[in-house]
Length: 494
Ligand SMILES: Nc1ncnc2c1ncn2[C@@H]1O[C@H](COP(=O)(O)OP(=O)(O)OP(=O)(O)O)[C@@H](O)[C@H]1O
Ligand SMILES: [Mg+2]
Image 1 (tube, rainbow, N blue to C red):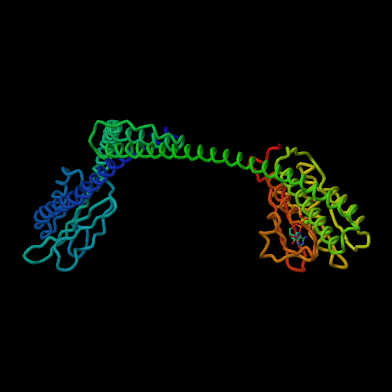
Image 2 (image 1 turned 135 degrees about the vertical axis):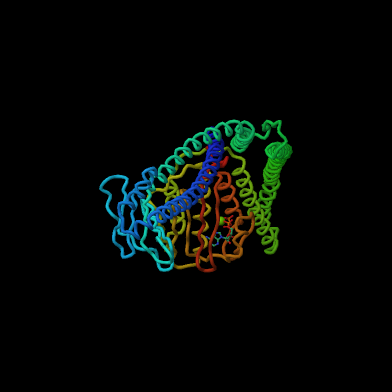
């Protein structure tokens, strides 16, 4: 590439030099030749005119005394002018009187008289110049003398000039070549080197290279200086940027480490809190049971009701603690990806749900097979929660349709669980996945509000995404992707 550039610029310089010298030379030659042509033609006309006048003057007596021989003798003096091809004298009534021809057999020309009022006229033909001169004696036109001169001398001059121009052109092109070779060192080479450095900079992002300075104090030296300056500035900025980037990366890593460790601490803390809460709760539950069984006869009905409420609340609290423990286990357990069939999970869960309430009229649709590469145990929890929700939130309808399926979007498999149940207000979509956030009351539908939070954590651990769509009484659809987005860390099987 660089070689190509080097050739191109020095070749351009050479071609430019040669073109300029050739153009100047050709223009000068053309101008000179045109000038020479004009002056040569003018001097030819003048010479012929003088010769015609002399012949005319010498032929007056021959015409007066009708002596063609004497006129022919006068004409034969033209032998000493080799450029005169033929000549002749014509009487005033256009009859040939005497003639001369350099080469025998040259025909007699039919020459018109000069236009009225003019003593002389001439015409340039392709190969000849013809001049006619009136022979006047005492105001009376006795006849005309014509001379025909060859123009081949003009051609020869042209050829000579062309040959000279060609030789000079060759010499000047040679000189231009030598000059460009000399100038190449001082003009082309520094530019080629500069281009080479610029290429290295843009290709390798290497800002430490510098273009070699030249000894000359010209614009190229200025350009090289400015370029090197610019490189230095970019190098400084690049270094500063790299340093800032490294520092930022280090800080991010440090923060991530801190976050991960405090997250772990928090999870461990919530796990142990939930775990430790179970002990006193079991005691409350056990003793209230004992109280109800052994001391029932000592309590009146409202006392018994209070005890029942205490037991119900303890049970509910135990459930909540179970859910919390499950949620933290989902985050901390080791993940193991393998190939699984989501459809078979969905069918098994739906069969189980149908067994719990065989009286319900629910249509379930699912493809034969939906393969995924994920953690079997965790995905089972996702499917369980989503299908249980679909089952639960369609329970107020006489008939329901629940569908599990998938679609392909840009090479990523998007699974969905869709129902036509009570749905939800789409403005609250964000709240669905937050722990203990419920869009329905416990009176409408029982639940702890932890299911979707668990689903989201599992999907996040897989590096995927989950989102919901729905409208009140128009059903709900939960979409999820288990594969991580291409190129993300989470993409590696854990
Ligand atoms: N299929 C659905 N149709 C309508 N609303 C839904 C559906 N699934 C979830 N929701 C709404 O999202 C809320 C959160 O769901 P989530 O599964 O987390 O809790 P839950 O079902 O109430 O309790 P649980 O912890 O037992 O699952 C629900 O309370 C409900 O309002
Ligand atoms: Mg739920």
